[in-house]
Structure formats: C-alpha cells, structure tokens
Image 1 (cartoon, rainbow, N blue to C red):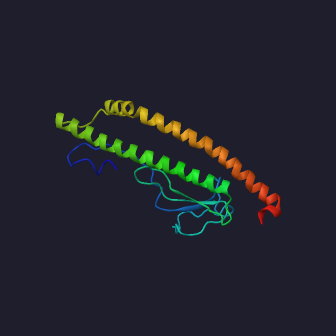
Image 2: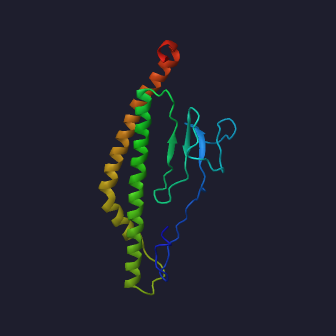
Length: 183
C-alpha cells in the first residue's frame, strides 16, 4: 500500500502483509472454519454475494484493502422476530463502525507516513534508512483520543450485543419450544 504512494527514488519501507486472496467463504456462525464438509465452509471458491444463506451461516468477504476488515453478510430468516432483527442490525452496525474507523485510521496513517518519508528524504537526500520511531510516537500520540473514543464505543456495542443476542436466543428458544406461538 505504501510502496505505491512513495515517489520513485525515495527509500521504501517493507511492509509484509499476509494476503488471504480474493475469495468469499460461507461458514456456520461460530465455527472456526476448520472443517470443510461438516460445517459447509467453501474456501478458494468465489461465492456470489446474492446467494441466499442457510440458517446459521454468515458470508465473509476478503479483507478490505485499506481497513483490513472482512465484510460480513448475515443470514436473514424469513420469519425473523423483532429481537432477532434488532440483534442482526446491531451486529451490522458494529461491523460498520469497526470498518469505518479502521478505514479512516489506516488512510491517515499511510498519508502521514508518506509525508514523513518525503520530508525526511528532502532534508537528507543521501539517506538510505529512515528512523521511523519519531513518526510512530507522534502518530500514536495524535490518535490516542480517537482510539479511546472508538474503544469505548466498540465495548458499548459489544455489551449491547450480549443483551440483544440473549434476547434473540430466548425468543428463538421460546418459539421452538411452543409451536402454538410460532403460528
């Protein structure tokens, strides 16, 4: 990512990134994705995002190139209760918060890093290596308040997810155990 933003002739930082490929996988919610037959996981095959999911499945995209977050498509049952809908919507909201925060943060980091490198190379044209410690220290100091606010919001959403998830599970169990209520 950074290598394409640095002008030619400037020293480049080596960022080793693990690329997971551009695939989508469908897996049962809560599974670790190890088994391919029992859990219904399809790896290495492209999945159509419009494919209807089976109960209990989620669809994972490949990671976003900037935020490094996977987009998740959740199963929507045809007879979704209000509690299940609220739980799913809150999960989608938490996912969007996470993606948007890391997208903006990683963009700012790459932009500021490229500016720091360009400025260091202007000051020292014969420079072969760049001491990045001052940049990292300053960037973390500048983004501390933003990270703290994000962490508070993230923890709050996760605690809300526990409450809404428990309520959705209770409603689902109650409807399964009492067939008269399901109709």
